[in-house]
Length: 197
Image (cartoon, rainbow, N blue to C red; front, side, top):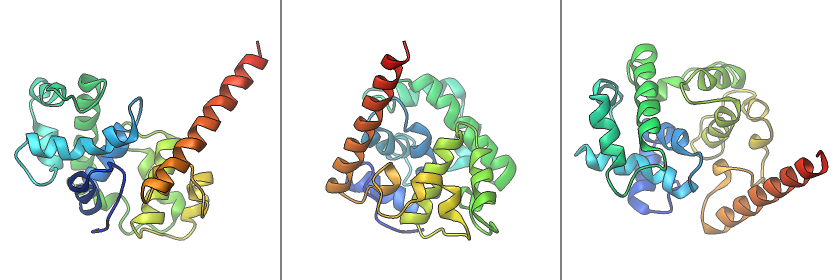
């Protein structure tokens, strides 16, 4: 895996996401309740604070929880909720160590089809169905991981030429389109909620 991603909108952080399966998973995990760029810059910030060029699941899994939470909370914080996200990242890394010997790419390598890949992603701590489908779409659309039926397993996020999620961001133009789509979805949800009162 060595591709150019444009999720953090910061060259060094994006380069790490493109070469490190674990960094990409951690970025996806962090992608909630903060701007996408902030979330996907997180793995690079964590690696830098650990004094490394990459993330290591074994190291993070065994890191002292309080010290790891402090590492994420140091300003500028890695996330709006650094304590809970530190815990989630450690749980993810512990799961990867236990089930995949710490190798994040083993989650998708050798899967027989998209359904199996979706199940594996869904089993990861911190990954619900939507997050798993978005990451599956990112794998297929930008990282060359395309087992049979991957688009179907990714649901609407797997659609070609769509602008729904991080899976569709390849630069500033597509970022603008994805943001516009998300704002439309929020407005529609708000209108539906108001109509249901």
